[in-house]
Amino acid sequence: MNKTETIENFQIKYKKHVFSKSIKISLKKDDFILVTMPYICPYKTAREFLISNFEKIKNFNLNKKIIPQDFKTKFDTLKIIPSDELKTIKKDRIIHFHYPKSEDFSSNQIQKELSKAYLEALKIEAKNYLVQRLEFLAKKFNFKYNKTSLRNQRTRFGSCSYQNNISLNINLMKYDFDVIDYVLIHELCHTKVKNHSKNFWKEVEKYCPNYKELRKKLKTNY
Image 1 (spheres, rainbow, N blue to C red):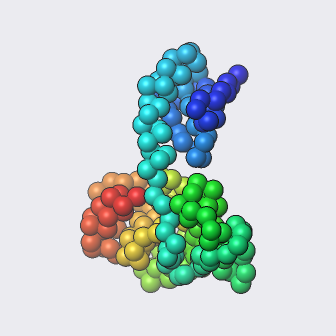
Image 2: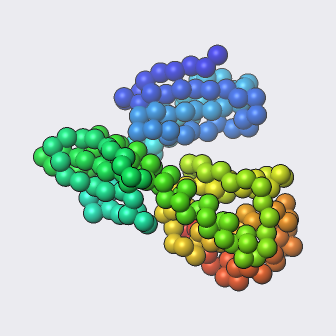
């Protein structure tokens, strides 16, 4: 049975999992923490681990990047507008984010709603650009794949299944176009080589000669 509690306004959920090999802490939202643990691990041990890392979690939450008022997405899909109320309107595939000009723009409430609006803008831009760009590169380099899907993920930028279905992370829209191309080529190469062997990287280098530099940029900036 899963347990929950509240510590300093954070909602904590402890979850046992048969496949977990260690205790892991995930900050899911500004005020929600998920603690996963091996099935045989006592809740007391997991709680002690959480408490020992609690200051780091709070500092991480406080040091999150603030989205500025003049922020723009790659294709200017998000419009940030001073207003009299806090609301988000989607119109003609453009996200209009209105915020109260009398309030602190860096406040948790405004930033939280702005992050949601930003996510919607990323979805629109990813659907418009990533899908078409993947199709273009596949035709250019003679790759064949099945379906494309878009997801919002924290760690994986893309994946290719054994059925050659390619999944792409909408957060790729935060990166330069050459970095995006590297990820798309990387996944397309997986339609031919289903692992990360030397043969795979030779295949990637064939279509993206500076992939090492772009791969480093991808890891550094995420």
